Image (cartoon, rainbow, N blue to C red):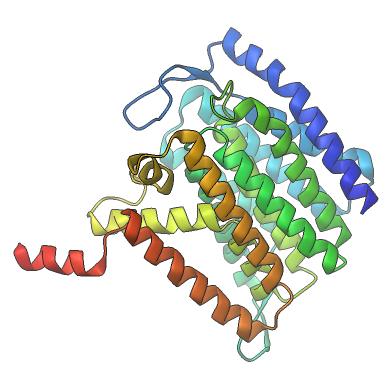
Length: 347
C-alpha cells in the first residue's frame, strides 16, 4: 500500500508540474482546439495535456519498483496509443486511420501476451479457455474502452475526473484481492489524472486531447486485463465497466440514439449526457460535478460487487443498467420506446 500511495503522489506531482510546460509548448506551435458548433468552449484552448498525464503515470510506475513483462507490454502499447493520439491532435487524422491504428496497437499487445485467456460463466461457474479467440476478444476490449473514454471527453475536467475516480475504485478492488501490481498501476493512473485536473477544470487552461483520453482508456483497459489474469475474467472485466459507468453508459446511449435517428454510429452529435445536462440549464461546472457524483456512486458499486458471487453480480448489473437507461430516457439522451413507436405510426 505504501508503494501505491507513493506512486500516486509522484504521478500527481509530475503531471501537475509538466502540464504548464505542455501548455506553453502547445501555444508556441499553435496546437489548439478551435471552437465549432459541437464544442462548448468559445475560445481556442491548447492541446497536449495528455503528454503530461502519460509522463506522470510512466515516471511513477517505473520509479517505484521493477515491472514484470506483461506490465512492460502494457506500457509499450500505452506509449503507442499516446503517439497515435498526438498525431491526431496535430493533424486531425481520418477516423478510419485512427481506428486502424488503435486496432493495430491492441493486436500487437495481445500477440505479445497481454490478453484475456479465458472466461468464467457467471451462472455456472465453469471456465472456458478462449484459445485463439482470446486475441480478437482482447483487441475488442482494448479498442472499445479506448474509444469510450475518448467520447466522454466533452467538458472541462470530465474525462480526467472520471478516470481518476474509476482508477481509485479499481485500486480498492485490487488491494482487497491482493493484486499489488494492478493496485500500483491504477493508483499511478489516478494520480496522473488528478495532477492534470487543476489545469483542466472549468475554465480549462489546457485540454488532454485525443492523446490523453485514448491513453487513459487504453491503459485502464489493459490494467483490467492484467487483473483478469489472476481471477475470473467475466467478473474481473465487469468491475471496470461498472467503475467506468459514466463513459460506458454515454457511449451505449450514443450508439442507441444514432441507430434510432438512422445515423452512422461514428457520426458526432450534441446529444451526449453532458450536452443534455447543459440543455436542462446546468452550467458546465455543475454538469461535470453531477457526473463526478454519478462516477463516485458507480465506483462504489464496483467495489461492492467485487465482493459478491457471480449470480448476485449479474443481477446487480442488470438492475443498474436498467436504471441508467430509464434516466437516459428521462433527460432525452435516447428516445423512449413509446415515442419511437408513435413516430412510426404517425409516418
